[in-house]
Amino acid sequence: MKVIVYDTKPYDRLYLDAENEKHGFDIKYMESKLTPDTAKLASGYDVVCAFVNDDIGAAAIDALSSAGVKAVAMRCAGYNNVDMRYAYDKLRIVRVPKYSPYAVAEHAMALLLTLNRRTHRAAFRTREANFSLNGLLGFDLYGKTVGIIGTGLIGRVFADICRGFGMRLLAYDLYPAVDAGLEYVTLDALLQASDVISLHCPLTPDTRHMINAGSIEKMKHGVILINTSRGALVDTPALVQGLKTGQIGGAGLDVYEEEAEFFFEDLSDQVIQDDQLMRLLSFNNVIVTSHQAFFTHEALKKIAEVTFDNICQIRDDAFLSNEICYRCDKNPETCPKAKGKNCF
Ligand code: NAD
Picture (spheres, rainbow, N blue to C red):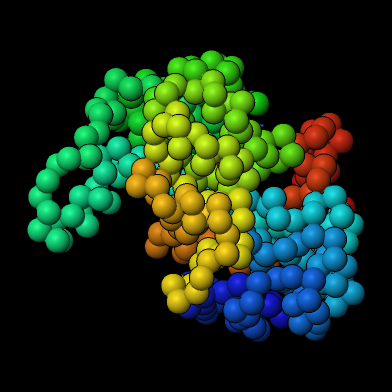
């Protein structure tokens, strides 16, 4: 099996190499992202391993299929960057559905605590011997209402963390979890009643820009918004407007709609051309992290393990337990996976 891994950094290689010692696959690491152009470099490889900001649209899928690639092993949970419908019957798509929901949920709480208690600002001040507290006033999380949108693996761990802080929990999900012990309400009710809103649903055509001018208007004045899910859940100009009026009291963003061009790279010696991103960075009540919520030792280890398990299943022409296709979740009656068969 020959595997080409796109969009890698030294830390990715460390964990993938350690795991590959068990398997001995022939691996080529690429620094560049997967695009229709770089897809041609996959010629001669059986499996492509891709990440969150790779472009696996129709053109790249065509290029990969013509290059003889059999499967794309996503080393992440989300797959909004794959044209699933176009990939059907051309490329198998496998992913790592869960690795550490704790990593992402804990990062969401880190963003919330930092924003609320202004520790990012305090740390800079004290380094310069500025010991003033002006502008650093926060509020008790205890007794406040947190609205959790999407109560899958990560949303539920985040709910548990918030419970530990003594917060009141409200939840919204298309498919409420009966065993989660959560109070499910309509999206509007959640928006209206929450002091903190945290997004944990996937990016789909339905959820794109679910946080927009209309939904922001319904929120409590001064609400804190946390997004560790996908950037395009939020309409950025509407968020900027909400921050300017104070309707949004703080935003913790681990993801950004146009992040692919910037995140994971050191661009500190360049002039950033994205005015929306620069406007967000100019607010003292906004924290942007560079899609790092997943970035813990435990998560990287698990991602490497499951990615290689997935690749072994592809090599063995076995049942691909982590395969996904555009039909998944549509109809369990006709879904081949529900009967222990591959998607096609
Ligand atoms: P999950 O599949 O376990 O849970 C997602 C939940 O969202 C499900 O309960 C689902 O029913 C719900 N949902 C789907 N459509 C919805 C809609 N229209 N409205 C409300 N709820 C809806 O996924 P997860 O593992 O909890 O991950 C959640 C998201 O977190 C992923 O889709 C991914 O985008 C993001 N993520 C980010 C990072 C990071 O490093 N920042 C890492 C991993 C995952």
